[in-house]
Amino acid sequence: MAKENMQEEQELTLEEAFAKLEEMLEALESRDITLEQSFDVYRQGMELIRQCSEKIDRVEKKMQVMDEEGELSDF
Image (cartoon, rainbow, N blue to C red; front, side, top):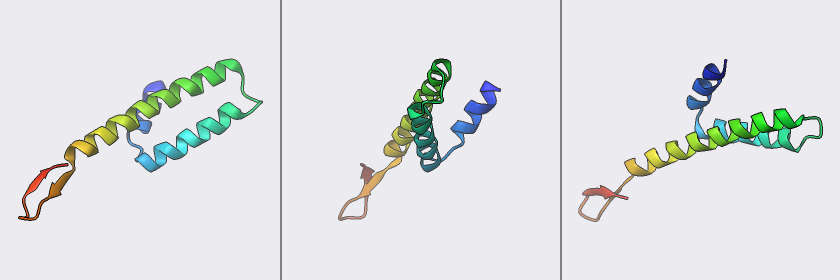
């Protein structure tokens, strides 16, 4: 089950991941969550943040800028 959850998170867009992180924050702020549940939600959130960071890094590496002569160079 944990592997399925991780695969699902890897396929999320950044927007979907950020929305899921927002939900996790709300769950952590809830008084109805147990300490064990909060540790699990925190761990999942940290993994999701790591995945988002990797996606952003990949996009940044792909970005290029066109100069005045129309040539592309890395951003």
